[in-house]
Image (cartoon, rainbow, N blue to C red):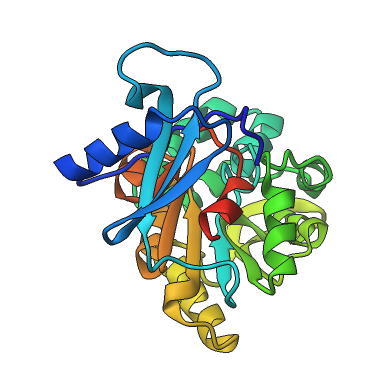
Length: 281
């Protein structure tokens, strides 16, 4: 990880003694990220690249994890969301843009990711508006996916350590399969769009990958590879990622919606994804 990267990670239930430890650590003139143990927690602190005012502690960005967190030197599984987590777009919105219904679809997507709408119902509603869209649109999106910063490096670190890395998406298999191949993932699951004569029918077939399905996929992978639950990580940004995050040994939010950031074990709102490997050392 580069020391110049900035980070804003959310911590909860801070005790007075813990705040004193952070204040003490942050007075040290150290150029690199620091780690230390205090009670049942391990602390990670990164120095700001510029003085931001306030107390010394304000000039550090920090958070804590349980000492008994997933470790890189033991077998593990990471299951991540795709849209706005692994990649920097919502694929259904980009399909809708090409179909001329972007405004209509994007508003529903945002509400669904905030947890204001039932995911399955809203997905079927959005997919229906895509009727008649050529599958060439999906293939063009799949060929130019903007992978989020640090993901390639994170996967390389995890793979080198023998971890299982997988994708569970409320998006679509035609795109998820391309991303999984590009990244060398061990497993992926997403939703299947019905296609007739090269165009979308506006329907879905098969089971929907919703919040409960994502948690099921995580449990199945853990059992399949014989990995203990304490070594499971779930990574996501939307409300339909909360169930799998709760099922994991460590739930990480990435540039997440406020409700997800508040419930995640830690939340990366600016730091690149490769920093996750540092948290496991």
